[in-house]
Length: 156
Length: 104
Image 1 (spheres, rainbow over the protein chains, first blue to last red):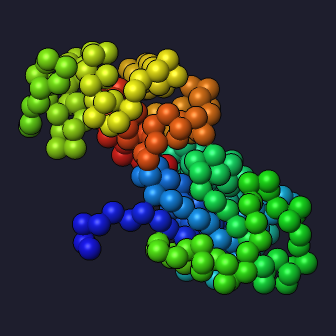
Image 2 (cartoon, each protein chain N blue to C red):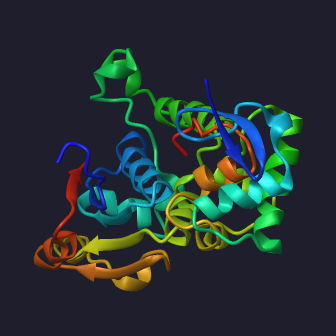
Image 3 (cartoon, each protein chain N blue to C red):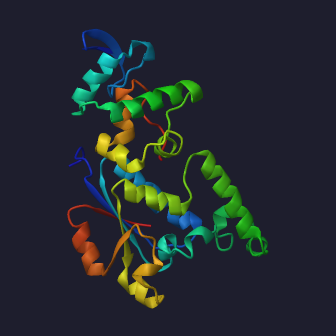
């Protein structure tokens, strides 16, 4: 078992902040680069990552994020989140990490499959057309589990 | 460091089979490594290999998938079709370049 290669991963992206979305995308893309089958399931605010109107507006959370190393009250100043986002994006571009919308296209081109969670889609009043074309389908939790069968599930 | 015989040449390789001395790379060596990877090299493969080698010579680092797409003009989808199950790793190995070290 220990030396057995992972063959399939199904990654759940449940957060809508920049730092919440990227780990799921990097892990999905990294899986494809290793020849591992990858499914990405977007739920709750994670849906922003595949929603056409939201994908370019995703920001770093500067409030309620102790790792930022700044007091909450400073993080709440208008423009702080935009600035932190700008800095992080600049750094990521240097490392050749694409913006979220381009990353979604890249994962799809790499053969990764993207899905939206039915419960969240209904809750936010969204439709299939609200999502990027790379999103294959809106799935129920049951369908997601069926798809994930025989592989590893990662929740982010 | 290990050596191995490939395409009638003795070459130095890392534990994972990547050439450690770029000067030992020849097109014949590339062909032989490709066969080990189960790939028959076509012009489309050579376009990727030539870009990787040229880019490596210019920048000193192995191009990322994104760079091969944006700068090399080779669509990501094609890369996965040409080098299935690990495009960058396989292309780098065939091109006689180091194993990819980046997460993207």
